[in-house]
Length: 304
Image 1: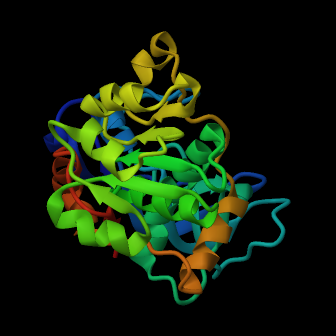
Image 2 (image 1 turned 180 degrees about the horizontal axis):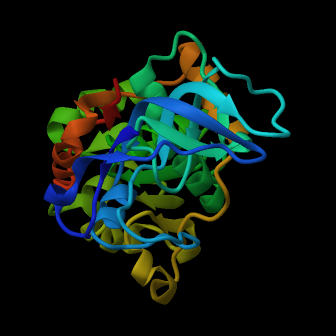
């Protein structure tokens, strides 16, 4: 048996409890990972509240979590290039809030030795989502990008990736996060009433594209500042995107992308802040924190 943070019925954070469950076994082409850390994100809270991701089958209890890091302890038939004892980081759809997880061998990448477990466990969502979003927006050198919610995990990654592509980035955030945003290479701006005017002052040449990691007012401001709605992408307002004529992320997560950013972090060329860790048995508290919608960096569960 293994310990997992699971829920037997959908609901608020309190439904997530430490539960004894069977240890999963590998099939052909799969690896089993002894989890050391698992990232927490809004995707997981939606699952806990009752949303079933496309392609997911099976009933309750259900284990949330779609990003993790740990040590491979079992490999299935036909797996090459990954061996027991390998330290990896990876992604799934569910099941990461547990002592063990089984995924396809193509869903893990090597963890560089100098990347801390908590960073490795939370890296997937930030970098994969941010790069897919910027690809969708076709952000190019010399353009100006507006990132709403720039100090969170995805925003942190998006700012840095856009800067690597030669774009100017204006990032919204609370005043206490402005120095942090400057350190990432963004021009910070406080959100709230008058935001559009403040952005215009910072970007007299206009805003070419906008990435919404916040929802609500962020979209209204984006419509005011970006002429082409095809260059506005939301990570929050999925239900309204089609009717509004704006984009959502498209494309697949890949181990190659994950390995690339893990290597950049290891080389000191990419920053990824973990603001707080919780032990697995406090997964409910981790959900409560991220559902506030505020905070700098990433929340991660640690698994002993």
